[in-house]
Image (cartoon, rainbow, N blue to C red; front, side, top):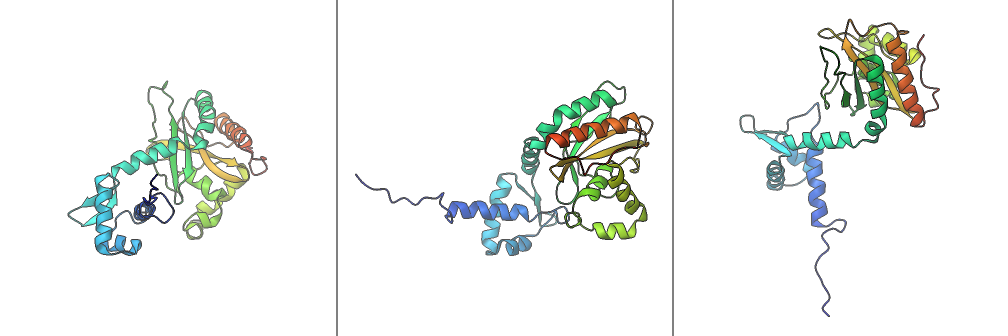
Length: 261
């Protein structure tokens, strides 16, 4: 019986593994701060020849993972990345765990409830539960990225994340006494009710902990008329109750959580 001498292309260090690693390296080169890259920049990042970099970018464009702008000669992430990102967000354990709590809060508060995670630079919405009974419905698109300094959920992350995980937080706090005071207030009360309203929409938010670490934020979103700024309002208390219950389910001892009032 003949013994196969075919090369195992799934072995570590094989050409197939190297191809995947290089493709991942290219995709990982794009950030919010640098959403567009030239072929020269991709080549430098890849550490290969320009011809090799061009071959990889061509294959990634064919898979809709990269987009190329002929006018600027720059690459950016393609539409298929959004599809993959949405699928990844939907599969996050925190989304599954939070769903029943969010649905309960929608019924209690009568407003839209949003769950966000920290993506390394800002909060990203991973689930939105709309209150469909209102004549005017506020919807928040899943995948939306929120401002870390002005949004209620961003401020909660600023209050509870380790400083090194929030880019430029120290600079933001030095420049904005208001933000510095708000972050301290959030740590004391366990939620944010004082974020700026935008286009008549106001948000209050609270942290969700897994063990001792913040893993997400949950927020109530509504009009400035419907969502009060009082820390002891029924809506704020309902939000705190739900996020504390969810945090306890995820293994938080509750010591890090503030209490309204």
